[in-house]
Amino acid sequence: MAMYESGEMYLETIYILTQKSSAVRGIDVGEYMGFSKPSVSRGLKLLKKEGLAETDEAGCIRLTAAGEAKAKHIYERHQVLTTLFVRLGVNEQTAADDACRIEHYISDETFDAIKNHMKKYDK
Image 1: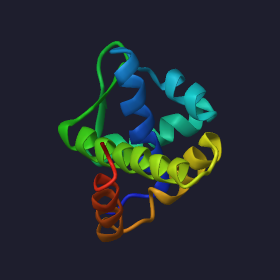
Image 2: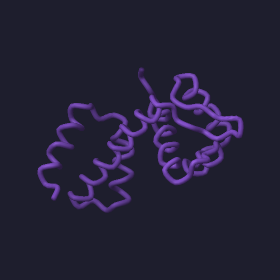
Image 3: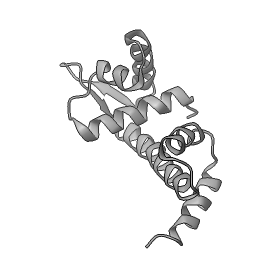
């Protein structure tokens, strides 16, 4: 299933927010991402259609097993790339911003090579 960058950003945001709170609502996602309520509603509708997220009766958002797996994959890319850039001497905010852009486009082959290379230098 092909997913656009915005869908991946929603998944990653929901994943991050669920690490902090078990009750994540659309308004929380909007505030975190700086998006309007209608934008978040459209994004969540697409995630639900793809079977990646669902909402309960109280309006709380939960990732499905497939959604959580995809979100973890995206989040790992973000973390690894940010760490790489910081180790290369990039300031933390720029590293995180650049990682956020790159994480959606880098191939699995290249990402795995970076991750494996970095493991050699981890203590």
